[in-house]
Every structure is written in C-alpha cells, then in structure tokens.
Image 1 (cartoon, rainbow, N blue to C red):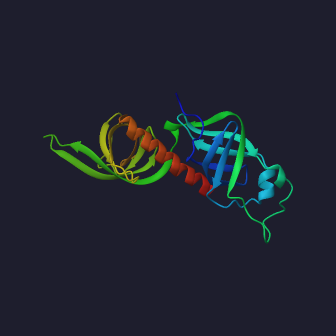
Image 2 (spheres, rainbow, N blue to C red; image 1 turned 90 degrees about the horizontal axis):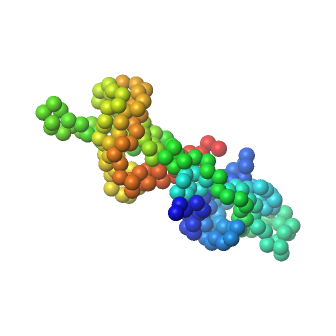
Image 3 (cartoon, one colour; image 1 turned 60 degrees about the vertical axis):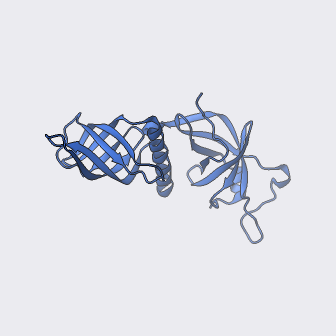
Length: 219
C-alpha cells in the first residue's frame, strides 16, 4: 500500500501562496492535522500567517504532492497577536489543519534537479579490456540523467554503463542507461535501463531534495 501522507519526522515545505516557502518538520499527526516544527523563521508575520490559506508540499510514494489547509489557532490566542514587534514571540510549532486528499503535482520518476555529480562511464575496447571515462551528471531524475563529458559522439539507443557518486553518504550507484537524447557531441540524455530499485529510490529522493531547494531559492 502506498504511503500518501507525510509521516512524523518528514521535512516538508509550508507555502504561503505567492509569498514564501518555509521548511518544516512533522512532529505529530492526527485526523485532519499535522503539527509542524518551523525549521526556519517565516518572513510573514504570524497574525497574517494564521489568517492565510496555506499549502504543504511533500514527497510520498507517488511523487511530489500538495495539500491545502490553514493553521489551527488555539481559541485563547485568536486575535491576541498583532505582529513581530518588541516582546512578540514567534511560535516554533504550528498545527496545520488540512482538507481534502493529496494532490499529485509530479510523479517521482519525473522530478528533476540540476546537479553536478561525478560520473564514471564504463565501456570496452575491441579487445574487451575495460575502459573508464570521467564525466558529470548535470541533470538527474529517478528515470534518467543528462551527462556531460562523453568521450566520443554517442549514438542514439547506445547503452552506457556508469558509476555515479551521489554524495549522500551511501555507496556509489552502478547501472546502465540508454541514449535517448543527443544535445552536443559530448552531452546526451540517458534513460536508466538497468538500475536496482533501492538505487532508483535514492535518486528520486536526491532529485526531490535538490529540486525543492532550487525551487525555494528562485521562488
């Protein structure tokens, strides 16, 4: 059964539409709500935040999802805060009351991120001696990558074996991809054809995390 909702410990984006995105972590969950620890201080004043229609964006087993909702403000605090002036305290944990079901924004295998990861390409001479070439993955998803630094003009449908240094503290990822797009003499798009499921999940999470940071940076 697919996991569609965030779990305790997951990091999400709390979005104020057209304004900002704030990194948060789920500390508690119940019917219709998530308690969120603010990992960053919102620029939006808290009274405005409590009145706004908000969204959370997160990754589940299907991809990037979104849920709409509002902050559930305790009755004793409603209307009490006026802003971030002297003596005012920003709440570090908020309760997000959500409504409806998760809306899938992008399937996991299509989440892409701009990267710069070292890549070793493995080939063979005519005498079958192994040959390795150093290149870079410059665009990555759970389904493929854009490679720069190919040693010779690749051919469409050519199969290329690789070892990718992901930099997430785990072992390098080994696999094989098929050339599906040619950009220049040394740059081509690969679609993964032989990749362990566990490694694919690692790449999906990496692409999601990096694309999330890139969206926030340029929002």
